[in-house]
Length: 309
Image 1 (cartoon, helix red, strand yellow):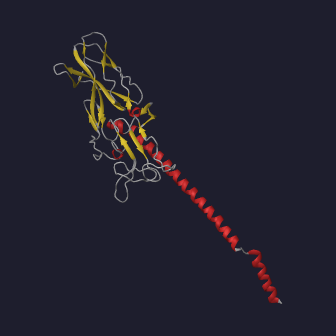
Image 2 (cartoon, rainbow, N blue to C red):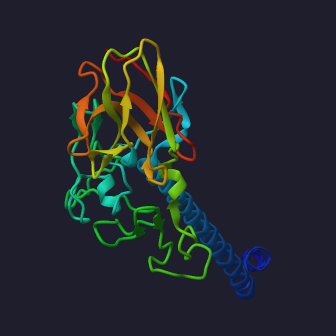
Image 3 (cartoon, rainbow, N blue to C red):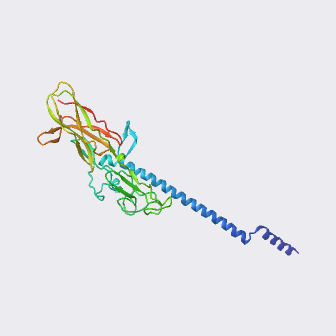
């Protein structure tokens, strides 16, 4: 009797506290659904993080090229970056990391020009990149870590003298795509436009000279870098007359010139009427060029005073 009651008690426990096969299958189905939902959420979260990282990296590239006009130093716009130093857009992203000829350009390194009184040339790196542990190469990839040619680090890049286009290939790592995270980003790709890296020049520059004891043929030179080396945009020539009072001369320059933003120099130089050339001889020889900061989308005001003997 005792054994029977024990078996009965055991059987009652099994029936009252166990799971049927159907119940077990239902629990497994629910857990599987929850796991898939969690996986989907995790994947979408990871994709969003990589997308936002890509967007931030695009901003870093743009800042490396043209600096950040919104930031100021001593009340002046912080004009810095590749264009300010080199005078043009990079031909590939590798030029932002190292001074290389792989992209078809030979860029002068940082050099001081005594005639202009100005520094110019490649002064990077403009992007901070940690060397790859495997091969030591420095690559600035997108948030998806897409791979591609070494010159552009897996980005889709197109560059000319006016526009720099940079796009990420997205999640699938190929050009094109239809899903949100697989589409090339951004859709237009124009990261740096013409107005972002060119300043506007006036048609005339008024120079007010002090009293002059001698007549002199003069011209202006506006110095800026090209491939890192300084070259000059020259004005027309004018004759400074002998005068016991101040006199103002309006020099004309080609204001259709695409003039790169950055810190530039302007000075008054002797004009050689025999060879019809604006020389590199400052007038007077003791003078020093004036320094101006050229910012995008703004007409530069270059009128200035100049002391002569």
